[in-house]
Image (cartoon, rainbow, N blue to C red; front, top):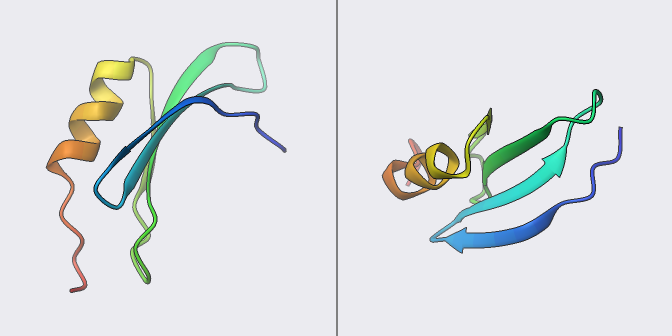
Amino acid sequence: MLRRFRNILRVGPVRVGTANDQRGRVKHTAVCTAPRCDFSADYDTRAAAELAARTHRCPIR
């Protein structure tokens, strides 16, 4: 499914964006853009997604 992200914020290699899920609810996603890092997670609140972005440490350096 194609998601339309809005309100995108970048914290280091992690991007946080807001989108609607399949049921129309607002979800906040944190995704690491570093090579070979598979971190991505959906959160119910923007604060939780931003906290995950700030505290994320890539396992591969």
